View 1 (tube, rainbow, N blue to C red):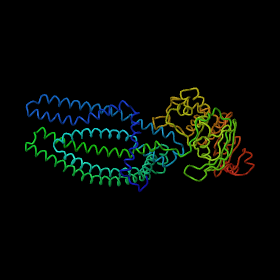
View 2 (view 1 turned 90 degrees about the horizontal axis):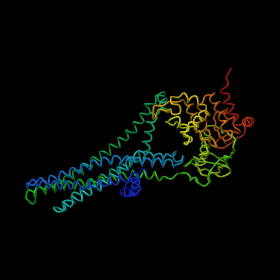
View 3 (view 1 turned 90 degrees about the vertical axis):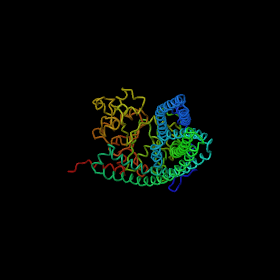
View 4 (view 1 turned 60 degrees about the vertical axis):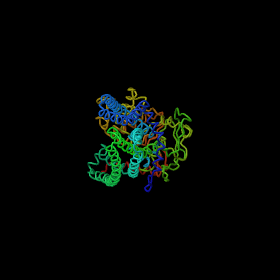
Length: 598
């Protein structure tokens, strides 16, 4: 939707094409509850007319001196109506939660199907934000609005049948004035939807300021640099602008509502006056007067309810549209072939003239990158910031697909391989590894979910990374909760979290390991110990190690030097030092940083 696009009746009607998908989603939540809720709404639609008729008979019975029988019917109807209301509250409370859970599951399921490029796309993030904010509760609200339409149509038809026997044109007067009110409200709601739709980017910005001010990883710097007031001011400015716009639309709604409600009230009073005048002339009795007055009121209120519920449905549909647009969102990357060939064991891995641009851009982040390695070998990739090292890791792990050239496993293009099977053969430690707010068992076992309950394998991975003694000293050892977001668990240092991330990669028992700066949070002694363990791990595997500290790259069989997305040098440490190129320059600069000046 662009800035100048208007939301008209046509667009609203087009959004109803998702009704079938919405009903399918609600049906899957719980068919039994769905049918019960529908039945309750239908019965509630009949009760106002039945109550009106019973009341008329009660009044006539009192006048005729025969009120006892009429009283029994009247009380029975009240009890039945109350029972329906209780049943409605019970089933709706449960069913609403089931529907919300079903929607949440669909959204999460969709995000797992998107590529990394999609998740990093701003437009996709804004679409996801809209869905998370609005679509979670609107499906069930829209469903109940539909039922309310049916409910009130039943009531309206009953009231119309009652009034037609008296003044058929009274129905038209009430319906016409209500229709005018509906149209004006529709236009205002469409305008309000456009405002909310265009706020997604600003709402994400406001959420980000809230995240900065409340997230434990950012709180230290926020407090030290005294940035709290700075970000709070920006947050308040966004919501101040929101309020100014909301105030304008609220005033417009107030003015139009006052005018339309005045028109409705004049029409209602006029028709009731006619009924009272005819009753005073003895055209009909008191019971009939009551039924006509209540019939007029029911006609207007049910017509208003039908129109207002249709209006709400239209509004919900505009948001539901966003849900199904998101669920139908295609990935921006070419589809990776899946299920063509299984990968049982990686023996060789090769990049052959691989070039890559991030989706939506034209600048090559990688250009004609070529290298190969085989089981038992490890290569280190070094280079200045922005040289393409981390992007290379994402392509190796098949997180991006839109590249030129070939990536080969055992001599076969990865485009012909089952991607999920291939990824299961790869262990990885990313530079921005995840802190899972779960137990230590899960933090390690998530590298291979089949091992989560296997204490022996988790302890083995802990020992391999040198954190065995640390784990034994935790309050509940493997079952110790980590982090402070979900529960009050143990808060770890950066180096401890990084070792756990490495253990998570080790437990995968993969063929190919991609380690993106796995020593960034380690002290020199821990770093030396870790590389000794990594060497043991990679002894009969393939290893790709991305390094910023060049001294740690010396253990690799071969070193690739990247600059500007290209491999500009490669060889062993001694060969590259003899070449006296960029690697030698960077190595000498880093070495000099550690020299003690006399």
